[in-house]
Image (tube, rainbow, N blue to C red; front, side, top):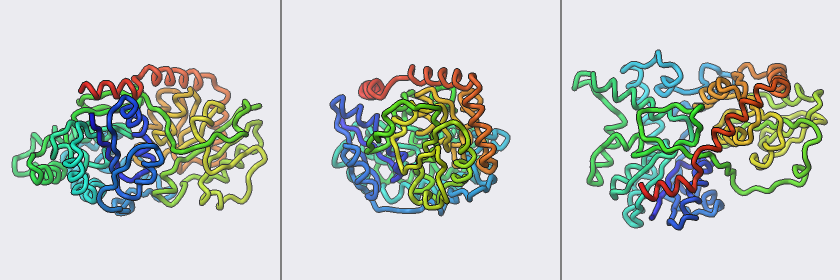
Length: 415
């Protein structure tokens, strides 16, 4: 079987696809990964075969996706996807206005530079299956053009599928001349250009692979295939200082790569947080991008600050992890049964952090309230209240019971 993965040029999103791509390749299938040219080296360094398509396009600020530091009003999901968090907002007018903005200013901009080349490559290589992530609709367009099966691989809670379900339901009860649908009109135009026509699976996939456990998901009335999250962060080396067991409780602090690679840096005060933990009998390990390290005036004696350390190697030695609630960090920590403090900001992070807190495996603080003293109080609760570790253990067991990528690869081969 030939399998074509396609992704936007976002390193963290691509990394969430690598374990399944490798599972398919290990099972003997041919695998290619297509994205904009600037991601080609990252793809190649993962050991997978890169296919640069289209042109590089840097657009993130155009869609108003970048939150301002401390601006709580711009945190979390944005219109129309915030209806997943606030069902009271579900209305035809609200959803239509959201799609009318974000289809051209997010989805089209991410996909448009890739479509012509991706379709051309698909016609040349003839994939049997296209695996795409929900910010690149060039994937289902190419699949439709060559008659390939296609599945959506989530890097988030399925806010996309749930929002679309609301939209389609409300569209059906509108007068025929008022049923505008920016998504359907855009995708249908490309499908017809290549000899097909629009179908709803071009928005939500013929099947959806969800890497979150049941207790952290949101779901639409779609066909889902669960897959256990497997950590992959790119090329990495375990430092010697991480080999011995921690002599006292270890606290990890990490805010991912998107804040510095796509935005203007962290929105919480790293110095304030480090200082708030300085007098505790703990070891703090903070992974802080070099651009953010330059903003630090000093590093407390009980803290180690490094640009990067493999999270899957660090977390097992930790008693608590402080992070931004990105799915990769949250899932990696959950797999080890370690209590978590989430300081979420962007897109699905606040909703995912709330799910984590309800599940009992951690705490969540709005970043506007994430000061040194509030982080300190939360960390002390995670260290000293046994309920968090018990709930974190249940979450770990829930994730370990999910099918692993090799099992999912076998299902896809039969699909």
